[in-house]
Image (cartoon, rainbow, N blue to C red; front, side, top):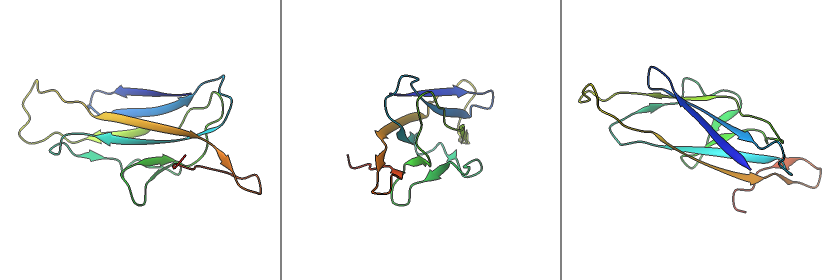
Amino acid sequence: MVDLQEEVDDNNDKHIKLSSDVNSEFPAYVRIKLFSPDYIPIDLASNLNSKWKPGENDDWIYYDEALGAGNITNELVAKIGFPEQAKEGDHFNIIVVYEYVPAQYDDNGNPYANWNV
């Protein structure tokens, strides 16, 4: 099982991590997708690192290695852009959706993610 950890800082940026349960029986690959109103831009490019990668043909962001039992991903920060028409006291939320799949193994024992499982 994988759990989402998210916090919003004083700049309204969302800090995101995924963690694998310490009793997990298998390594898991994870991915996230962010949803916001069209008028609220989200900047991920400035903080994508060697572990988080944008999908080539989709809107998902993939963690590059399998999470073993008790492991946590590197933090991904979603920098939120306030729209010009926003007023003090306006509220909004960036929705984080995540999925995970058990690691599959090729004939040489190398793990990989099969998102079509």
